[in-house]
Every structure is written in structure tokens, then in C-alpha cells.
Image 1: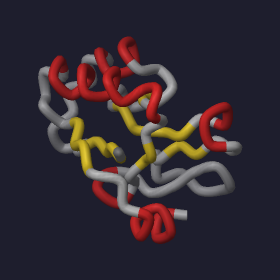
Image 2: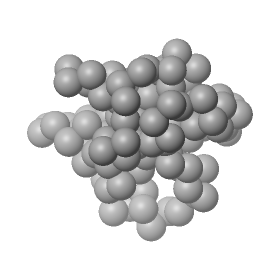
Image 3: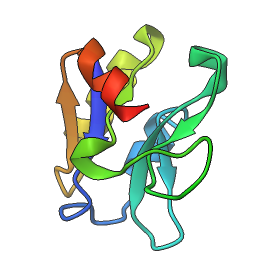
Image 4: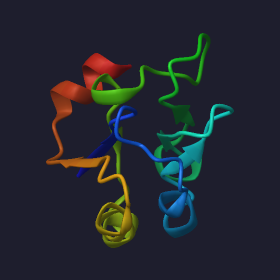
Length: 100
């Protein structure tokens, strides 16, 4: 499974990070982005549109892999999100290759 956040719909509530802190991270502007943690994937990657190593594109271009152990938490985050901005996708290795 993969996940991304539509920043245009994000309300900045932060429920996602409360439920799945290994997948969601707050930005300085009060919106949330997705991430991949090193303990699950070997290296950390935050899809926050910042420059440099360890950062990737945000929004629909910033699609993060979800560890199998956190699938239920990510689904719960999407269901509880007041902005309905958490988008869940089936795993797609082509997206992983493009986003890196």
C-alpha cells in the first residue's frame, strides 16, 4: 500500500500523525506530509518538497510506501481525517522508482 496527502484539502488537524507517527509528519506551515522511516525501509524519506537528500516531492507526486505493520493505522488515519486529504493507493513499484 502507498499513501499521499492532498495539501489543498489538508486542514492541519494532525490526527494522522497521532495515529501513525511513522507515516505522517507536520510541516512548519501547519500541514502534514507523508514519510518513510528508516527503521521500516533502511533510509528515511520525507515527502515535503524540500531540497536535499532525504526529501522528496509532496502531494500526488510524493507517494510513500506503507509498512505492512502500519496498514491498519494508515486506513484509520484516512477514515478519521476531517479534511479527507489522505489518499491511499495500491503498491506500485513504478511510483517508487519515479519518486526516488
